[in-house]
Image (cartoon, rainbow, N blue to C red; front, top):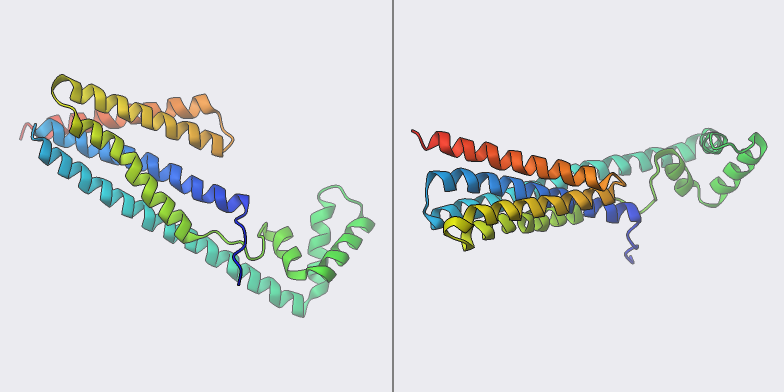
Length: 228
């Protein structure tokens, strides 16, 4: 069977998983890096700790997205089966449901009835699942796409602070890592706002504040643990 082209919702779901994965990758990795770097100046130890956390975060995000989208897909498939049975057993009720859909959009009773009957006659299952659930028949969110997107983006997000901390030394190590984190979370804030049609400036500022707080908290924790 020929693969159908992805809908906009499917593409946006994959992108959303990617942006969230990237943001989590940045914040979790920098948290570990700051905590460990405060406790020890050994760059190899810092790098291994950061790399281990990066991999753990990437696979954790991927598995979480896979489970979440799989549940959504199962729910959509179940809804389609229910509607398929209703079309066989109570088609009048299904016609009425479609009619109500158009009535709520300001279309007259007579016209809504005609539209509902015509659509049900041509594409019954497609019509009812789309009007009742917003599902496009045959187009279900792919858990594998979401998981892969989250896996790659979390790894890419976490690698920026990891490289900044590992490849710089002396007085440049901390400022370069902080700058890498702020730039990275600003980018993910921008992308999340664009995808969700939100306020770009607000999203960027919010992400930067969260990034700074994450670094400050883990720096403080590292200092505290270093006292023991």
